[in-house]
Length: 253
Length: 319
Image (cartoon, rainbow over all chains, first blue to last red; front, side, top):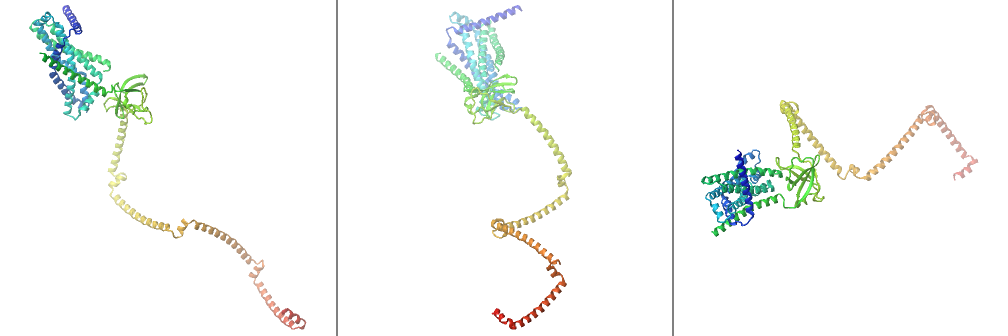
C-alpha cells in the first residue's frame, strides 16, 4: 500500500520532470525543424482522411438522429443551430482528439517504445544527437499543432455533413444554413474550440511520448506502451473536457 | 530524399494553411454576423422586468437586427438597466423617441428587444442615450385575454343552442316562420297587399311629379306667387286696401243700422212719417187743402193780373 503510493508519487515526479524537460528543450537551440515537419506530415496529413471521414459521419449522423426529437415539436428549422452548437462546442475537438489518440497515440507509443526496447535511443545519445529533442519535442509539437488544425477541418466537414443531411429532407440554402450556424455560436465558442484542441493535442502527444519513452524493456513492453498511450490519452482528454467546460462556465458560457 | 522532404513540407504547409483558413473564415463570418468589427453605439434603457433577457440577445428595429444586448444589471428595486450595442450604420434611422419592448424571436424563441416607434422629425440616437421602455406583448396577458374569449365563446354557443332549439320547436317568430304554413299564406297575402299599395303610391307620386312640373313652368298664378316678388307686393297692398275698405264698410253698416233704427222709431219726424198712418192721412188732407188753396190763389192771381191797379207794374216785371 505504502509502496504503491510511493510508486504513484514517483511516477508523478517523473511526469513532472518530463514535462519540465520538454519546455526546457523546446526553447533552447538547436531546433529540429525538419523532424517537426516530418512528424506533422505523419501525424496531421496521414490522419486527415480518417479524421475527415469520421467528422463527416459524425455531422451527418448527429443531424439525422437529432431530427426526430426536434420534429416532435416542429422545430426542424432549428437543426442548423443545434448542429452548430454541438459540433463547434463539443464534437469537433472531442472527436478529433479521440480518433487521434487512437491513431497517433498508439503510433507514437509503439514507435518510441520499440526504439527504447531496441536501445536506439541510447545509441542516439551516444552518437551525439539529443534524443529528447529529436524524438519527444518534435512529436509533442507536431500533435499540438496538427490536432487543432484537424479540429478545424472536422468542424467544417461536420457542418457540411449536417447540411447534406438536412437537404436530404428539407430545402435549405447553403447561405441560410451557415447564417443560422454562425448565429448560434459566439466568439467564446470558437476560442474554446481552439484552446481545447491545443490542450488535447498536447495531451495526446505528451502522454504517448511519455509512455513510449519510459516503456518497460522487452517485446511485451511495446504492446503495453501502445495500449496505455491510447487509454491514458483518451482518459485524460475526457478529464480535460470536464475541466475546460467548468472553467468556461465562469465566462457566462 | 531532399525532394521528398520538400514535398512533405509543402503538403504540411498547405494542410495547415487550409485548416487555419477555415478557422479564420469562421471567425470573420462570425464577427460580421455579430457585428463585432463594425462601429457600435451604446444606448440604455430601464425595465422593471426583463423576463429572461440575456446578454448577447438581439435587438430588432422594424424586424431587422440592429444590435445586441451588451449588459444587464440592477440599478435599484424593480429597475434593471439594459445596455444595448447598436450598429452605427443603422443608428441614423433610429430616433431618440423609440421605445424598447421585450419580445421573443418566434413562439419558443430567444427573448429579444424590439425598438418601436420613432418620429422622423426627432434627431437620431447618439452614444449614451437613454430610451424609454414599453411593456410588450406578454404571453401571460395573451393567455388571459384568450381565456376570457373562451368564456365568451362558451356563453355565445350556449345562447345559440337555446335559440336553435326554439327555432326547431317552432317558438317565436322565426320558429313560426319555419314551421307554420298558414302564417306563410297570410304573409304572402300581406305582401301582395303591400305590393298593391306600393303601386298606388307610385301613381300618386307620378301625379305629384306632374303637378310639381307644372308649378315649375313659367306660367300660372301659383308659379308667379312662388317666384314673382312684385306680384306678391301688389297682392299685399291690395289686400291691405281691401282690409281698409271692409273696415269702412263695417262703419257704414253701423251708420245704416242706426238710421234704420231711427226710421223705425216713432219719436222723430221721419219715423212718424213712415210709421204713423193717421199722420199720413193728415198730410194727405193738408196736401189736398194746399192744392185747393193753390188753385184759388191762381184764380186770384189771374184776376189780379187783369186788375188795372197793378197791370202796368206786372208788365214791367215780366219783360
